[in-house]
Length: 174
Image (cartoon, rainbow, N blue to C red; front, side, top):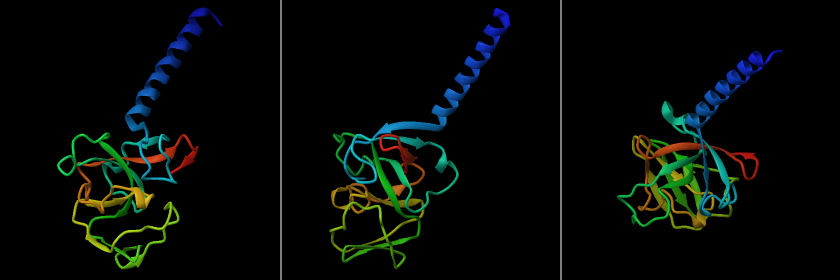
């Protein structure tokens, strides 16, 4: 092989690598989780891989872990982060009930193996409107989520940001 052939191969490899790099970072993102609301699924300071395009043309599924943009009309602007990580519990037109510290969706008890500890909160009922989702943290007793009017329902078109797909720190799929 002559120098010209090697140089040509290296240039092609570099261009292909650059294209893959750009495509990867347009499709995926990486974030560092701040806070404890998703313990024990995702811990404070974990590095998480995000899929930025999953929800471009479809609704999230129940139990998806999602990144949402905070709705600043409901909270103090001095908050540390403009994004939250939570689990999808309810979709448009669902009824969510919390009764005797148990979670029900459309009158069916939801078994949640992923929560940190049994939930302790008052009884509540939510009817999820069209275009919204209901989210909760896995650390139910230390999570600001859709149960609070500071967060409330999440607007699919304006607040749903990405799907968390892999916890790099724990080397596990989410």
